Image (cartoon, rainbow, N blue to C red):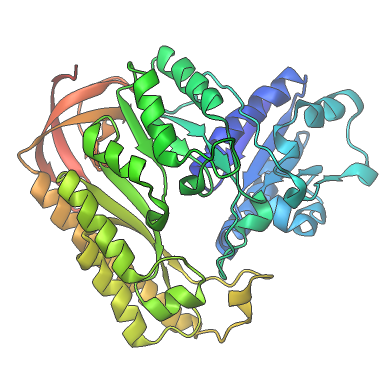
Length: 422
């Protein structure tokens, strides 16, 4: 064994794991397991702790290095674990010197923790990578951190304030990945619709997106990770309308469908704003599909408020739901609000998931008989432009295949490969 990386959480973590592995190898580190954690829920932290124990149990002689958002926000939780050799912060995990010191001198008990104040970080370096191991699409970091303070969210304390990667660096990275054969690029970050506020000239996400599509003509597919629709700028809307290389799938940071709950979450939109955004985009791109994050059982949520979250699924025409039963994160305002009984939270989460299964099945049924270009992810599986999963025979990971949709399972499509897409 040399270096293994275990990744939890978001696409940004996946991108950073690739950087971590490269920097650790370049530093000469050997026989180590890097665990890149997530802190978005208590369950995510529990899974990370479980992974730490398993890593040490299966590889007793390996160094176990824990990093990521949970390591940043709950440093003591991991430093107090006997199985952990080193805890690195979210900045330190990307620096070669963090691993060079370990490779050269080992780890002493007195330096087990290397986690600095994330709020003091003012820039995000653009780390160029050649690809992502085992992935058919490549993630590119364009932004990190968040300036907003939603009452349920611990992530700003794990990632720091919002900071953007300069446009030239982003374009260089995408050009490099496209040249290495990647047909689809996903722009990722913590709050990508806040892109550019800290850069000269304050370019917006729409500016960046248009520039990428203009300057990297060989790029076949550009996809956005989760967006905050209230921050969608005019240039972004124009790109959505004009350039079909921007994929017609938008995952919304919605969180709730009730205005009072949205205010108590300190979100910046109301339900009408999200409904209007979906209507506007659908007029521009009739083939668009929307997904959304929705929290079930937020403090003070009544049954009537929850019904508003159920209704907005249909009012926005959502297809892919990510449902999060509310999990109080220590240190957040929502953790101090009047909590609902866990049984109510669990039951509402189940109802939201059931609704999600219904709308997904409806979407799948409408796809049958259509021909879609499908990006092959691995043998037997791919994704349409709308990010809907397709089971099909044939194709090589990373290539785009014209596919006739011949049925569905209720969870994904069934396809028949016709030919490679142009």
